[in-house]
Image (tube, rainbow, N blue to C red):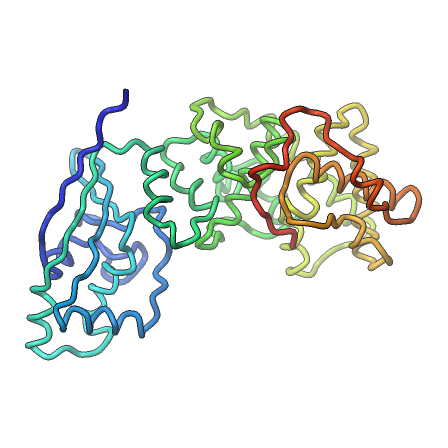
Length: 365
């Protein structure tokens, strides 16, 4: 049985809380030595000026301010409290006290500084429990799969391998990814969409076609695993996928930055190409040439080419859906037509684990 989580409610003031707050990493005045930090899973600061003014007004009127909820961990024998809920509030407190909302009178500053606030500190949370708490605390805010992966960086070899694919300048595929798509180094957004994509590619290479997905629920087993990913397998398999784009470039070079970035999506071409390569080991060259020829048609704006990869319905990336994409492209390339709805409905991935249930909606553009 896991050790119990211990929770401490600390009654403090806005001024005292602000004195312990490190600030947001990368912002002016950030102080690594402080006790309270924004948890890496917490979203970016999104409160607009009216929300910040409302917070100030609440304090001046003596209204209740919800608590700041933190998880605790020990770094170099020193406790660090990481904000899991209340990141916008604590950042606003700092902005109010530094006159970034408006200049406070002495009386107002005294009222704000003395305003009571509760700091909730949870100790003994495992990484899995932190992820669970984060999702529960932020039910009113959509927590992306990428953010959940990012929360697992410290304890997940799979996540670290995906991050290396994105950010490591020494990764064997670094130059090819930049040339084929764009320079992904430190370019992810707040929702960690690039990380989602990288997880789908790396896990698909390592664990099979049913894991070519950004769904955290479907990847969680391997996110929690301490098995070190075989980079050779990832580099070799993804290298075959990247060869498709190189072959397409030889026919119709692609230089438009927007279109290059558009290729970096498991839900569009990448997932289906990887699926085809993994399920057709005996004839990889033919698969590569088929997709290269298809991409060349797309780039030439051949009638029906873009439509030939689209599957109606929610954009849930499953093995069935990837196989249907491959099938539609096959029909288009061999017979120069679009597959019928009846033909597509009959196509199923032949592994029992493939399922359309509980999957995540993924971007196709």
